[in-house]
Image 1 (cartoon, helix red, strand yellow):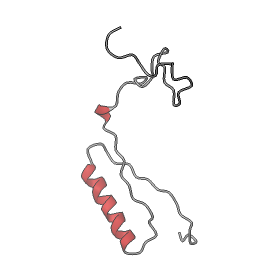
Image 2 (cartoon, rainbow, N blue to C red; image 1 turned 180 degrees about the vertical axis):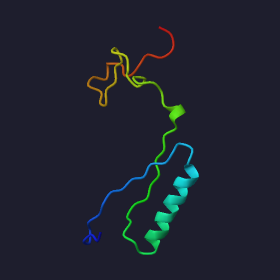
Image 3 (cartoon, helix red, strand yellow; image 1 turned 90 degrees about the vertical axis):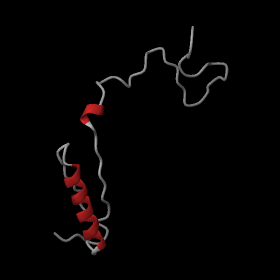
Length: 85
């Protein structure tokens, strides 16, 4: 299908977790096609190691965690206490 100048279509392809070589070959093929003049604007690989993903909820901070992007009052301590009590 031909697209007018400036239009495009997003595409993605998934590979098995043990198929990094295949994914890299595919990305290089796309880069070569782009270099040859095909309208391919962006090639990227994103991966996630299944054994490196923690259980759900590990990023949740405790309810008493005090984090502010801006100090409302400099007298209010920021972050979690460190060290002893």
